[in-house]
Length: 394
Image 1: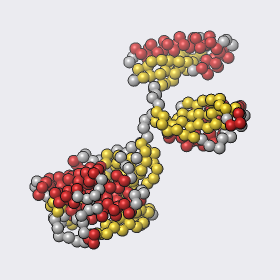
Image 2 (image 1 turned 135 degrees about the horizontal axis):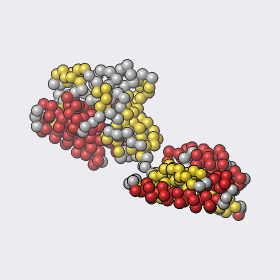
Image 3 (image 1 turned 180 degrees about the horizontal axis):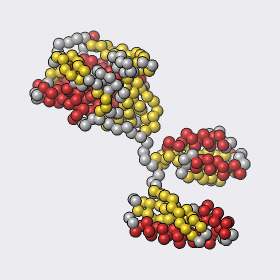
Image 4 (image 1 turned 90 degrees about the vertical axis):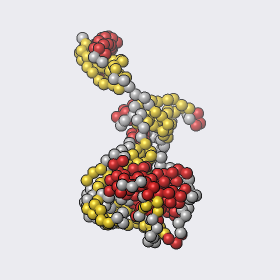
């Protein structure tokens, strides 16, 4: 499964957790992941509730932690995560996210990475946010995370180091390290936190994939703006170029005269091939298997045609097909019987064949009152001449 983070209002750690929970990750699993960390159990709590952000509903994950004066270094964070009873990929991802944070802080303050002591991002709630993000992706079996451009707002915020401009310096460092695409924010304020930036930089690819969307999770930010402060996580499967589905149905009670219009409608709706296969059905009755091969995005339309236009009660679908295709274009050649369309097949940008369109030859033969093969032979000669011309230009 892959996922796409749609970020109209940026991202924070708790917004990402809200996306994961709303997309189907059980709250109990989030609590379980947090409980594996060597943090005092009475020092934190997690509450999940449905909220309205403008006109939109979203899940708000509220990680509450007691204030603490402890300044943790990267080695301390690594030790907490490494000692937790969590899958190794979850530990590795969480540690990598914190390492990005440390690298950014070190560059901003001009110190070595081992001397960086975390303030806001070393707090208990940030540790839970980052470990939860890694655990949620792992348990939802999301193998690839994509993200939209990141909206960056202006203004000021108060941090442990004092008042700093937005976007926060560490946030900018994290995003610049991966050449993250940005866009203007819908308004002022901190829309992307250092934690959110580090999660994206470590885990996401900034492209929108071709995918079939199966469900969506919406995570809410804590602040209220004049726009819905949410992030959306789209979950689904990648659409591979050339991926095809095969739809089939067995029919034994339909007038054979009705098959040609069904075939025409299937081809018009996107089917690449449609064919009929004689079969024997129950009680020895003869029947027909109606089959269509089509791009995955045409599946629903073709299934509707089969169900509506035939007597069948069901259509089965196989999604394991992949089709390699040659490019094609239609050209027109002149013959002694008039213009005939020719289909030119191209492979790797090189024309390799040209074939007359049968319907054009049939119509020209009827107009000239000659056998169809005479027109076809003439069109073949013209098509071959056209092919040689095209090949000489490549």
